[in-house]
Length: 166
Image (tube, rainbow, N blue to C red; front, side, top):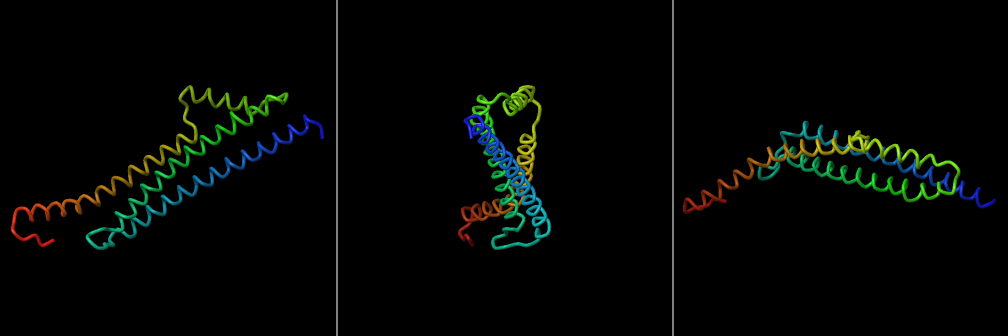
């Protein structure tokens, strides 16, 4: 096998790996979306369950939802960075040795779209993660506010009267 054929085979292998990586990214996003839906349904169907000290299942599931959305955001950002590295640093360098540069041209087209402020799929994913996190955070705040207010009421009662009763 001559040098040009070896370079081409390495290029094909790396391009396939990049495609597999992007496919894994989509599967990961599907996992996060399903996780958020499961937490949402769990929150709806277990909302009346109260644990010790007025901690509800809704409070716990909302905290879980915020955490999942934060991990989703970080995951989308991480995959974007890795995909950019695979494009710019590796595939484009291999393409310099080939007569045609399809990935380089494709990447330039993506950059041109980004310069025009066109939304790409990763932007939509990040917006979905932020909206989910805000929703779960709002539910969390609405659930924890009465608990905090009751705690402050007990503290105020302790300082106002001789017996605390905590």
